[in-house]
Image 1 (cartoon, rainbow, N blue to C red):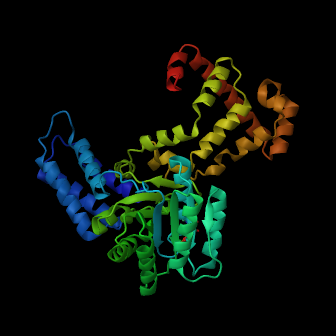
Image 2: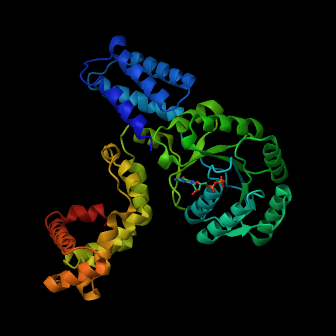
Image 3: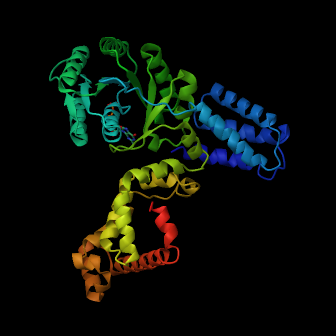
Amino acid sequence: MFENLSEKLERSLKLLKGEGKITELNIAETLKDVRRALLDADVNYKTAKTFVDNVKDKAMGQNVLNAVKPGQMMIKIVHDELTELMGGATTDINIKNNPSIILIAGLQGSGKTTFTGKLANLLKTKRGKNPLLIAGDVYRPAAINQLQVLGQQVGVTVYTEEGSKDPVSIAKNGIKMAKDKGHDLIIIDTAGRLAIDEQMMDEIAAVKKAVNPNEILFVVDSMTGQDAVNTAKEFNDRLDFDGVVLTKLDGDTRGGAALSIRSVVNKPIKFVGTGEKLDALDVFHPSRMADRILGMGDIVSLVERAQEQFDAEEARKLQKKIAKNQFSFNDFLSQIQQIKKMGNLKDLAGMIPGMGKMMKDIDIDDNAFKSVEAIIYAMTPAERETPELINGSRRKRIADGSGTSIQEVNRLLKQFEDTRKMMKMMTGAGGKNMARMMGN
Ligand code: GDP
């Protein structure tokens, strides 16, 4: 995400690298470039101008500290300004009531129904909620079915009314059922249209009035750039929503919507969608997003994801096995599966400082592990536990069984052997450090 903007900002900030101190003259070119980068990212003209004026004021107002180079200082100023532009602090959703009611609004195709499923999943697994989903998109029959499928995947109840065309009564009946059954959270999906139209706005305003939601989230496709900002403004004028959900950020190389929405509608972005899968939803942190835009990575999010996926108990067991040189292909396989659970590989690479840019043109996807997994699956249980058993004829059988080649099998065995050796070394002399790293 945001690759184009990142690249241009980094290039413009590099201009200052050789300079001894900031002067009006030497930052002029940088500021011009920053402004151009923002305009190319589809940030609106006024926002880009204010941004650059603010950066300039801050840069000129700084007493140039000897310890900090102008290039670094400008990066910090631009970083802080980007954070501010995207809303400053992280803003949570309001789910304190019992039940809390969340109303979802947006145009058709923006990703509303998908988001409804993702949000239910997130609030159920991470915040211990027991959500009920209400299918209020009465015009797109497929939407009801889509929500039912999502509900099944997440393991939450979906309230639907076959044949009804009255979203207000569906919402009211759904809420009644949620209260009867003790759900502490209700998420209402509503109908969208391809473009803004009065009837849709009237309808959703009527649902808002009837159910008095605790939180209204407006969902918008980030790839639509300035259109997203304009749509947000119209929905906000009518609904006075509480927060924005930017979907399809995984496909957004420019970032204009993320950078402009806040300054235009003065409502925070609360979530971002980063893929089609159910777990491809992140809480939006302006400062971390600024890190990513400036190619500084997002280590905090990476560590958080790793913590969610890696089980401390498992890590301790694994460490013991490594110490005894019993690390096997089964352990290897389960490590691969844990990494895969952390999300899309390219997305993960983008969180490591400097890596996002390096990986920009490299096509890494979740298939990267496929042949490795296939080879391990083609091994017998004994071979997985004791790889030393794998002689020449076994290698051929494994290659045939996995649809790979003997060379690929050999390469994996060699890599595995090297990994084992390295692990042994680390648990020997440097073992104490590793144990500390793993939380022991
Ligand atoms: P609705 O009409 O607003 O309910 O939109 P849908 O939820 O049906 O989404 C429209 C399309 O966008 C579907 O194909 C979704 O899989 C896709 N989609 C939704 N969110 C994301 C996202 O964050 N990333 C990507 N890549 N696709 C998404």
